[in-house]
Amino acid sequence: MDNHERGGSFEIFRKQFRAWLRAIHRDVGYLVIGLTFIYALSGIAINHLGSWDPNFKSVVNISQLEGPFPKDEAALVTMLVAKLKLSRDDVQAAFYDGDTIFELALVNGSARLDTTTGVIRTNSRESRFFLRVANWLHYNRGKATWTYIADGYAVLLLYLAVSGAFIIKGRKGILGRGAILILIGAAIPFLYVQFTSGP
Image (cartoon, rainbow, N blue to C red):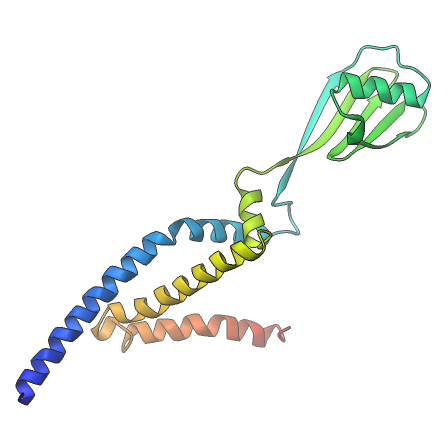
């Protein structure tokens, strides 16, 4: 085989390799879209833990109860549990907060009754739709099984990063503008660590 034939074979291989690279990159990209949404949205949510609770939202409900209300605390607890359709196990503590405000400390919130007006204010927590589940997965609360899935996802992301660098050739590829952008991306965490004195 002369040099021309070898060069032609190499060019064919290179074109086939690039075609396969693009095809696999595309399919892997589609495969990880769902997981990427979960990790990206959860990551944004838990980045702001100081500003809000990413797992639960607070729900306040004000309603009117019919009196009269018993003075005995145990009897009042029994009455409130029945009226609020609670389980006795939901009540962690019960006490008067002043002369007229009776409070139930609940497993998932609280209830404060004004015994003079019958107005009761309940505070409870409800799971945030999608985010609580996404955060549960992000924190790897699923343990061993999810660890393997998360590791597989990380490997696929690495593949996308590496294969993506070689898809475009020429000045816009890894030997041109692509190399500059890769260096900028790698410099961001490095510079942040340097300027913030690191961990």
